[in-house]
Length: 129
Image (cartoon, rainbow, N blue to C red; front, top):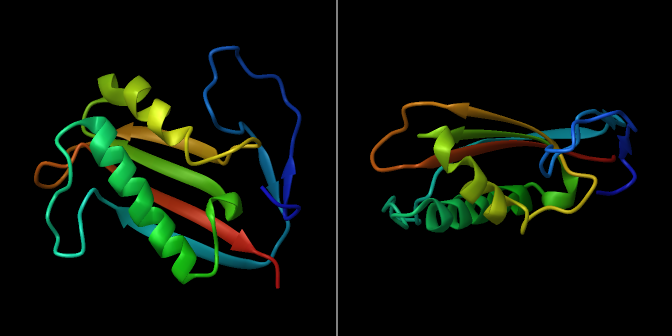
């Protein structure tokens, strides 16, 4: 992450994953990436496993970030929607490949998703003026 974010040192349980429990944000331009799903440009679902769908969904998020002039290093908040929270550890292994410490803050929620989706992701990013 770049200097627009302030990592807050806080106590966190040792099983915490790749996320920051608290993150300060210097004000700038705010970009909110709507929920992205594991689909190609034709709307076809890509992948049957959580790993395949996670890669595609994160790539779709990056495409939207880039359209706003951002990258994963500008993301400060991620919300992950999973069809089944039992997929969490497998999802997390893929997610870690796209972000570096200090990680964005993050929430994960089990929900009913459209079609054959196993995951949907939304992101909040910020760039300095």
